[in-house]
Image 1 (cartoon, rainbow, N blue to C red):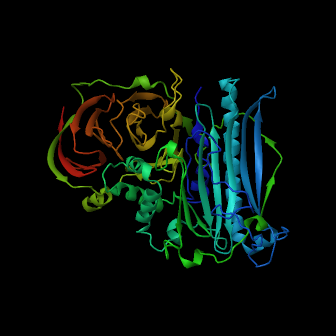
Image 2: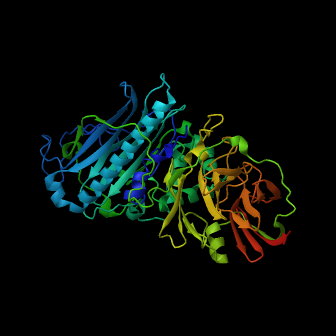
Image 3: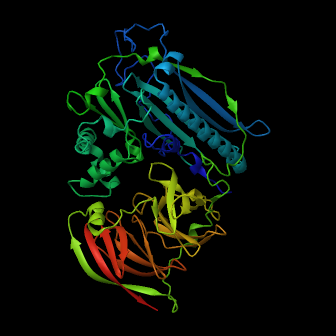
Length: 570
């Protein structure tokens, strides 16, 4: 059985399609009740403090405890998928946000945006429940619970400046744990457009340091985890600030403006281990005056329970069937294929000597050591592009989609022609990267995802890895070769050879590299035909990016910039 959980484990995919950003996250954890921040409408304010006055007001300033001024209704749609004999195979739920007639007239563009979100929530969850049901029936695990995919929404704030929606995700598709997390959608009601955290901050450059200091002060017992999750173990922990800066730029931070300040939540595994749980901080107006732009600070104390109603719809049935292809705009229909996982035992671990191969040797020319090398600046100074997907190699344009847990953990690779206009291939690599292993039926211990890809001579080479130590998942950080005509795996390299941002192919050699905190750091030369390791070269720290100009190889590592002369031999 080939299981493609990537179709929706990422409820976050909804927002990358409907809006750019919006706090896209999904995390593995032990239970769906772990989100301790869930609040009952009308009984608590956004900080979790009960209000004793009972006299909050609506947007127009009129008392509305009778519920007559409801502006928005959150409808929950339960789904169920049953077998022919009535057995429940999978369940799910998705939200629908419906503006009142008056609110729709006041905010027509917001209504359009909500309609898009509602459709994406519905399509994503229905597809998930349908395919979960199909796999659950195929698994024939009579003693296990039904599979499930749930997205729930809670309105935190709604006024002329901001509509804030807190999202909770829950997915279970077998295995030890379900996956769950929280996210947020923040919209401008007037324009209907997304508001990012960068939009509301007055000090965007200083915010990551502020967030770091607040986290460190509030959670001193897990500072070491913050450091390890940011790929650094140094005392100053500059890497953690860099990680927060990147998340801020990508709008992948769950945030809401609460009555007393800016609230931020990090889900399990996002910046610390699962055991750390959800990490909440509030940057209060009192402690951080001027952090939030005045336009987004509301003086009104609105009782959300008086202007937002909730409703449960009737349970709807969906059929158990595989989803062969789903592309929201229908582009490239019929090109979608899932790449299977024959076995992780297919790793090629031994050195290989082919007397006819066009080999390369690397002769070190320079190494410039520093405390920390800014790869972006290194690339700019040398006239390179920063290596990341999407990119074009001149023959094809590569784009990674369908994030699994976080918005960089992509599971699907789209390959277009060189100018990015015509979709040629759509490879779903979830099963290949995460299992089940066809021979042993096992799954990866942690989420693996696409790092880089390139097609050469009708073979797709993909760098696959996870974000963490080798001890967590030793069968990771490798390069796999796939025949683009048969969609079959040709070879896998040895594990722990490729976790850099890219790799380069020169002649019959793949140049890649691996390194991590407290682990060995090497440049690896792999045989293009077999994936076997030909040579490894020790470097001071983990490689980040490779570039080739003529016969010179440029390498950026965590703390050293190298150049090598490429010598080609037959």
